Image (cartoon, rainbow, N blue to C red; front, side, top):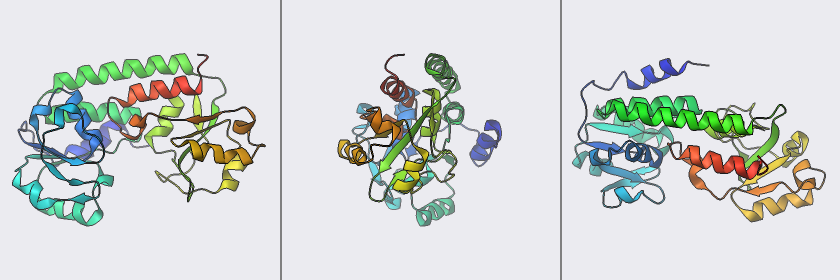
Length: 266
């Protein structure tokens, strides 16, 4: 696996060293990180995808998920873009490259990369001390969760993203790392795609002890397969917190909720 320091170097080489004054965030998770760093005053625009933090309610929009308004973005004269690749389509990403606006690309696959990227973003915003403090706090909280919920034999978990067709998360998706913190193992961790499509037969074969989904009806659909360990043990669990879908500092609290859901006895 590529070391975190090298991944970060590859992300920031194209960004000038000078602190920035006008930032546009192109992902909700990156907007949250800026707010968590106490730097919302630097944001001049955001890409919308769901509810915004209170601090950003009045900011101009530069489009919605997958539909970037480049003319609107240019009118804001940003000196730094914060980009999660999945929030902008390939054609528009190519357009952004040709604009030569300094860009920080963040796509963390685990918590080590997330905390390192929070520190790197803080440096680009000219507020490195805040990044060090926030990342240090997040690492301490993650270690405390890991110590509390660790198991000699991790629980086998199927994390359902959607049902028709059936999607889950792969091993390189940060939610898999959240499961590990909680003493669990993604039964499809061997798959490399972020959101691979799987079959019901594949889930039955891997026999998860816990099935997680964000929709109650999707969970109840598994009751027709009583041979699955999760169904036998009544471990069809509803994940109500959407924070697991946004890799920012708040994801650590969302992970804590996940851990308590999976293992309330701990």
